[in-house]
Structures are given as C-alpha cells and as structure tokens.
Image (cartoon, rainbow, N blue to C red; front, side, top):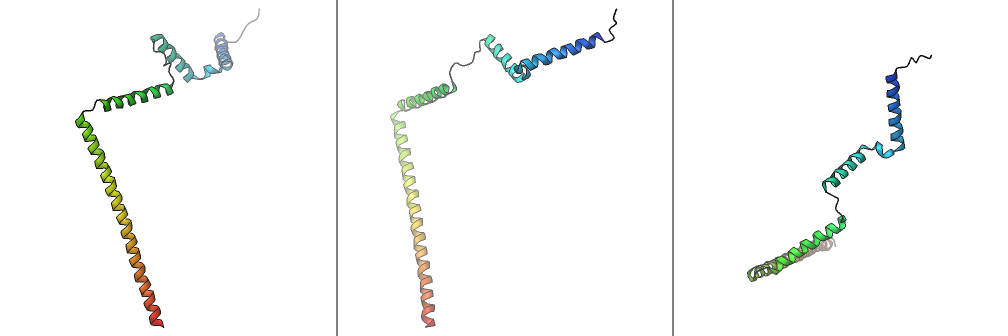
Length: 135
C-alpha cells in the first residue's frame, strides 16, 4: 500500500487554480470583467423588456431635427398679425443698426485717411523747408 504524504486540500486548490487558468486562457472574453458586466446588464435589460433602440443614432438625430423644424414652422403659422408686425419691425431695426454701424466704420476709415494725409503734408512741408533753408 502506498502512502500519499501530500495534503488533499492542497491538491484541490491547485486543481481549481489550474482549471480556472485553463478556462480563462481558452476563453479570452472571460478575462475582461467589464465585458461580463455589460453582458449581464444587457441580459437584465432584455428580461425587463428594455431592449435597445432599433434605430441608429443618425436616424434619431434626423428625427429630432425634423421635429424641431416642424415646431418652428407651426410657431410661424400660428403667429398673430400683431406678432408678424413686431417681427418685421424688429428686423427693420436690426437692418438700420447694421447700416449705422457700417456708416460709422466708413467715416472712421475716412477720418484716418484724412489724418494720415495731413501728417504727410506736414512732414513734406518740413522736409521742403529744411531743403530750402539748406540751399
């Protein structure tokens, strides 16, 4: 009869470690816990009836844009004559402001031109006077 001096619990522990290592090596997905968690969440959601949206993200964005556009069109159609008049008045005021700002900007550019021209005249006269006095 042969006597086994090894501890049977130790062998069980090694065997469990080996099977765990082998299973992880043969199935690389098991290594990623985040993948497992995601899979569990998907299963739970499916069981609860919360299936993922069948529409792509692009379709959802397009539908949202169409909704916003149709809301704006409805809003425009439901305006009262007073609101229309106010919108037209506001647009005219904005146009006047733009024209006024452009006019001011052109005047500033013209004034700068005039100032530079006057400075050049002064410089030219000083240079001319020095040349005349040197002769």
